[in-house]
Image 1 (cartoon, rainbow, N blue to C red):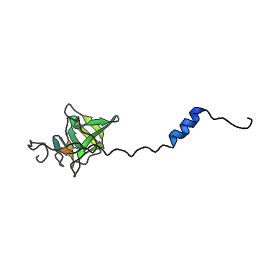
Image 2: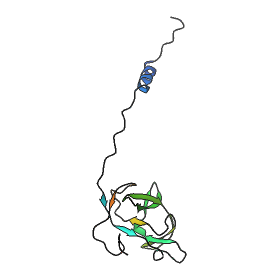
Image 3: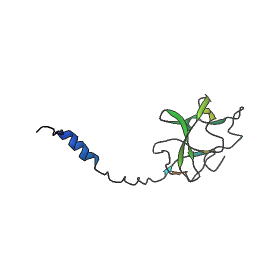
Image 4: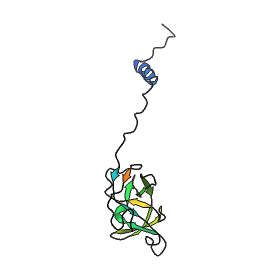
Length: 133
């Protein structure tokens, strides 16, 4: 038959596959709060001579290759915040931007901590942890 175009089978399957409506996404899994030590920053004790915030070096983590810290939100969730690091020593790091000195940092270990994860500070506090300093 002249003038009738035959479609390859693959093209017909592709068209049929595009018409399918995907199922709605599953609700996110509810994860229990992770117990982690926290460090509450206070000015001026956590500032260096230039007014930059100084934090423990081990509080810094990387997400997507960029340095940041997990800050405890008022709702008890860890929020990843990008920071710019200045001078560092064996234990401390100068933060040039990203923190103002009034935050509560989530301390390592960071296994099980992600942006938005619920954080439960430990019930016992030591100097430098949540609730004391």
